[in-house]
Length: 101
Image (cartoon, rainbow, N blue to C red):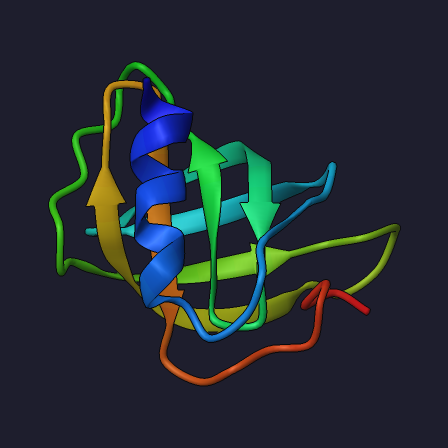
């Protein structure tokens, strides 16, 4: 069901989403969550939602993408969609796919 809701939003996107296995850090409201990526595009991404996180649509976040050891790339975003198991983000500026490239 959650995947279907995110897929319905695809008509509004400028670029296709692709599955990509990665972990990232989401900073939101003074706290941080390590989450697993569901999919991503140049304009945004979706992650699996941790059970102890209650994000709200339009909240601002910082996403930290890390591919290997070393520094992470940070991306400013807003929360675009929230479901029971997924959270979708819209980047403030388009990003390479993946942002940690």
